[in-house]
Picture (cartoon, one colour):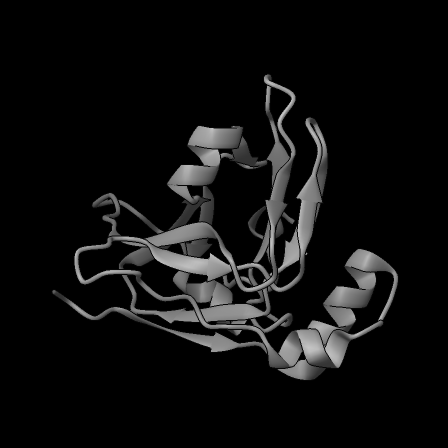
Length: 168
């Protein structure tokens, strides 16, 4: 298999800023940051790299949370990281990523926010089930996929930011 990427943690300063912006608190932020785990595959045959929850998460039906993962990824050109809910959480609870599939482009790594990967998840349960995810438990998976471009592609713009940054 071709090796195309490497995961890193964002700096503590970046995580602290994003955590406070998301949760309006800095309580336990150093401990949370210290316990962030880099994504990894569960088995040699797994396609997906499991992302681990940095905090305990409880979502009742129709509740949503934005999660600063503390993770960034350096990806070879021509590849993209596609993020999905972990299969079991999607199947058992209808847990959804709010943007359906998260797309992490190779040039996101160099953004002014250090390429910090965020995700927003919703408990879309129509069975009244509450999702409980403990800190350190896998909740999302990322799969690296090769992509192509058109023969007449002329994109030259440089990214600096996350959601919607290429249309600003």
